[in-house]
Length: 150
Image (cartoon, rainbow, N blue to C red; front, side, top):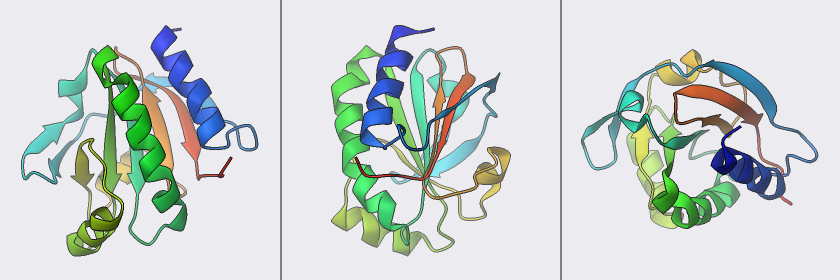
């Protein structure tokens, strides 16, 4: 297994409380998608091939997402130079609600918008937040539902 993925999943297990609710190991191709980013450009998952991607689904009404966002930003800042990125997919129907959230809890990683929840349906998101780790080859390796403060 890729050493960077292992270290990040280990950190996630500590940060997200996965010792209580473990990340489920999976091995399936990550479904490709294109979503509008906060900066207004379209970002495609396929364009991040070669990087480890932490795909996180969140909503403005999700209390645990408020706690998790700064921790994800810390991970992103620590590992981005090693080929790691976070793609945070907001599922709010109203983008303004997401903007208000981000004004209070900013992140330096790409924020994407999925107002019709099409991408969250592709990934069978069952809880907020949901995090999927994708390896450099585009294979989804781990999924973690929810957030459990450490």
